[in-house]
Amino acid sequence: MTDIIQLLPDAVANQIAAGEVVQRPASAVKELLENSIDAGADKIQLVIKDAGKGLIQIIDNGCGMSVTDARMCFERHATSKVKKAEDLFAIRTMGFRGEAMASIAAIAQVEMKTRRHEDEIGTCISIEGSQVVNQEPVATAAGTQISIKNLFYNTPARRNFLKSNPVEMRHIMDEFQRVALAHPAVFFSLHHDGVEVFNLPKGNLKQRIVHLFGNNYNERLVPVEEETTIINLKGYIGKPAFAKKTRGEQFFFVNNRFIKDPYLNHAVSSAFEDLLPDDSYPLYVLFIEIDPAKIDVNVHPTKTEIKYLDEKSIYAILKSAVKRSIGRYNISPTLDFDQETGFSNMISPKAVEDIVPPSINFNPDFNPFASESPSAPTNYSAPARGYEPKASTKNWGSLYEITQEPVVEQTAIYAADDAILETKQKQYMQLHNRYIVSQIKSGLMVIDQQMAHERILYERFLVHLEDRKGASQQSLFPQTITLNANDFELAKSLLEDIKSLGFDVREFGKNTLVVEGVPVDLGSSNINETQLFEQLIEGFKNSQQELKLSKRDSLARSLAKNSAIKAGTNLGQEEMNTLIDELFACKTPNFSVTGKPIIQTITLAELDRKFEK
Image (cartoon, rainbow, N blue to C red; front, side):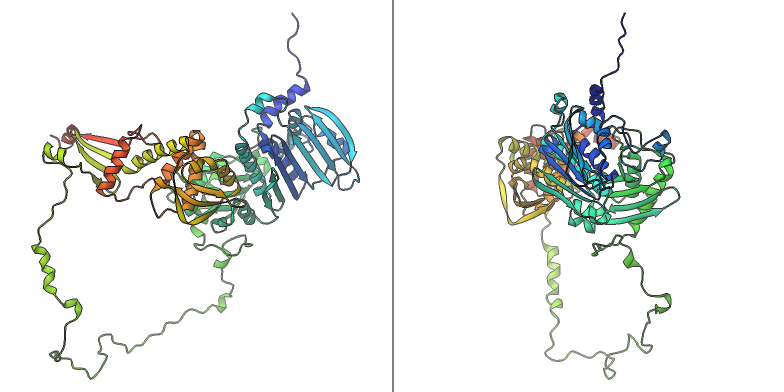
């Protein structure tokens, strides 16, 4: 019997490795950006076409490579960052495995131009499917330029599993934001299909956060800083008032490497305990500096997981530092954009000896019971002729006429007999402005008014999304909404469906939308279009992350939850009648959009047991 175990060809081995390292265009973007950072670049340009499926191009001004290094970087396990096993526990660079370039070259058409600063001529290498097609000298700028075309061209199954262009572009923007946040001293730009999405000048961390997420974040940030023998912690957290329904704006960096760590996330969440509702998540951008010997980053192919030697101590330090910053931050927003922290105004610039305590002046002869005029008589005298009592004392006797009016009895929640039930409209009672109570033959029916209205609106919005005939109520003054780049891309992909719901909205410049009308179904003249639209986008992201629903279902669910009447709203009798009628006209009246019961019944037998009958 012949031997059956064989070594895989390099091309096949590279494609297998690429399945772990390069899962989608965003994975290739992450690897190339980190290589540029490791090369010492302070200016990095990212060009994307067709959401990375057509072209991914990185241009940097890093150290560049020699002819030999340029050819060697495409070999498996070829790296300049690790030379022996001990180096794995002293890693300061982003990359270290030497797999990324070989994996990318195995599944794409790659062209690289590179030149060292001390060289006059650079090198151009073209590779397709791990095979070098061309290598020649070339005149190019100092640094490295890498172009990746037709990603997954030779693995069609993987290419077919890619999502739509807006979804893939959002993943690319996520990776871009993480690298840009970790290196605020580096210039970054991002172009997609000829449109500039980001232009991030060099600056400090606070400026980088504001440039990435919007100018309104300047007033939301609270500085965090702590130095210990275990870790050094710095960064920003968001004020509790600006928490969102999704975890999108939460970033942990360990030695400038983005990580995902539920344990550390729990430390921050517990610091916000009792300040936020259960379904709200705060913003944070936190950097942990720690000795590389005390962590292991070689855990996962994407390098987003880390193991620590002293996990509990890091948890305690993180929680206490965040909690202290929450208690110390200024209530009013800082106006100095270039100022890195918000605590300098709390420290007086004067010397201690120059501070004078305030003085208190008072009149020791003041008597509050003394008369204003010393000659005024102290005994009572009759009023002069022509005196009339004040208006507030006139017709005082009419105050007692109300006691002679007939008493109007409050409407009872039950009918005296069956005849009245047949001739009169059924009456409902509102309990604590949260529940609607009605008598039924077997006992009582209790309806949650908020969940009932959510169900009504949800089914109505689904119909509008199907027939695309949602009516719009025009706003008196159109509202301009500026979103961060990621949310703007999401809103653009949803624009047609949003219009089907009844929104009259259009693009208006970079990352900006104009809302000129809202759905008639919302039926309120006091709608805040900006807040409603932002909540719609947040709710959609939350539904997509948690429940993996379809796009239209997530959109209808989000708008229904954000526009339904809330607990605490007082309803009139006619409003309650309409709400109940529309609820029982729904396809699924018994359950809310989240699957919770809307209607509860309490039978007479249960009431009897309560009273021990």
